[in-house]
Image: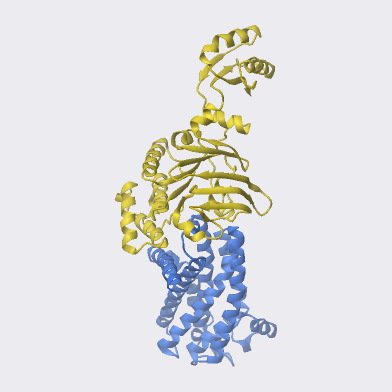
Length: 256
Length: 332
């Protein structure tokens, strides 16, 4: 345990150095969520007049969705980083060091989670400046960031599968965007469940993003909704099992 | 006991490519062992199995008596590996790259820093220690990569085509450093497609071609095995294959084994006391009415050894790295 911590800590520290040194790595996944936050909150600001909307403002409604979107984007950075490490020969260097294979994985996960949390923090700060209010205070914001980061890790498994199968950073990014958009719009991220067309509402019920967004939304607007949080964690766990199994298989195939 | 023992190693990649086909050899402690062969011969595959990056299909490989498949960790502690395509983190400084490798090999922070500093000095990178590796020239990156392979003080250093793409000056400086390293007790396992490099460095070498070891021995013994110096007859520009064939037949009379090599417009034979038999050769060629453009006597080279044992000339290719993901674990 201490050994895994020590080893993955070295690899985590490497990623942190890169993150600080190349700020683009931090803002790469943030550009699109920030634009969405600024534009959507204005364009759709009158939606709160719709009967049944149920939130104080569209901004209050939107902030959790943008945090979730940031986690999705951040997750796709993980796969791109994996391709970069393979291409640069760094992964070989880690594989030949007398460290556990699991330390390589954990180091990457911790680093992904840290970056994702930092990105979510930026979104929270910008929304505060825009006038958003958080019902559960600092503790709620922290919980929101942790939930988003955990979900990001689970989603990162998917991006690593694509990255390892295609071996191409650009392609991973494009596929990531192609997946992110439908997944996001086919959830309750931008429209409350009761205002969605019936078929879409049904689809949204089977969409993992819906559960994450709803848990975050409760934290921002109403309070500690433990049912929603439990559901979000359950969905994240289930998703992680699937994507990590796939990513492990893809990894084995790639190094075979 | 041998430091590295490779026993009936076979590696077949998914898709059926037989990269290494039943090879066996040993490397003794203190040697500079040259592994010589053209691109795609199986050199890299063999190294990657020994350094635990690739699982063999069958066969047994040990380093210092430890099985590389059953017990990879202690093997990783004993080996350093500088791959053909350099692996440095461009966003980290030279120092940070080295310290990280040292830490991953279990060195305490202070010890990792001390070792890194020492290596930066030896590799003449001390002035750029704090600069990001991304700003380095090819030669500097190669030296840094070598440093990474050495930071934990390995017993045996694996170098996969360490001088491919380096200018002659840097190449010679690297040779010098490798000799010095070897004199301090580090065993070196080196692959190369440059025959002169193998000749200059290796205390013993094996020639591998198409996944099979063609021959092994010290460079001097291998050359002596050709049976003497080379006599090469070169024909004029308008000579056809018939003339070449005729010249080769004449030369065969002077070979102990009755063999002569045929090239485009030239033929070569190895014979003892080549210089003193030159007059005879001239008379014989004249007698057979072979028009000669040039006649020369030379010492045998490793190229000749290669040709004799593989049936083809060494083809040097400056390969561009293909996508690393395809290569990853898959290179031969």
